[in-house]
Length: 308
Image (cartoon, rainbow, N blue to C red; front, side):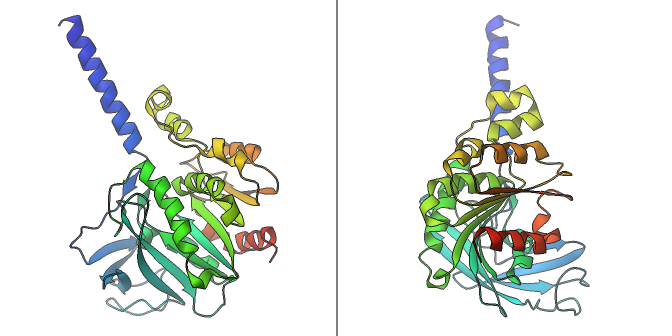
């Protein structure tokens, strides 16, 4: 085989490696434009989510015996929550219509509003459970799907993710039901990395930042999964570790010592570069399970950091 052919094959393989590595950051669950429902599998339960009306209002139907969902009953029952979900569609600077859910307790008036940015996979229907326990502690949560996720339009790219994060905050600030509440960004995993960048770019609009299971940079986490190829081929685009030093409001960094997805040391690295006032909350358990396992402790820390 001629040398030129070998070089061509090598370059082609390297290009494929580069594309594959960069695509690993986003693994969306996208619902087809003509679909009206999706099926979730939550800790052994099968749940159908029906999307109703122009804003895709979710209706949860339990199809199996419950193990972790509220309000007992048999298969086929509509799930009754102690909170309300308002589904909205709003425009992002990415040019895409995004789906967001405003989630509120039916019993407690909110003290603060959380913009929740989820991780790199699935959609808000399957990830909003991560925030539910905080509702009973006086928080309302606005969770969004990035472009190409769930009922949101467009293509999932890291550039769109950043535009979507900023647009979600700006949309949320226009809502009358957030007036008089403290504004917090809470991100998990990829959403935690994103949250740092969005917080830095919008410091004057928010009161605090929380990250859980955040990686320090795209290249750093790429290196964890692909060695030197991750360093060589992963595009940085934007970086939490480079952004966090530009944020000067309260920050809580949560990371599990048992995290098998994002190394514990990355949380420590972010904390090292963060400005005061800051707190590092070391927990145990799986990747981004803190808001479910340690909801009471996290609630206490949030209220303290925003002086409530």
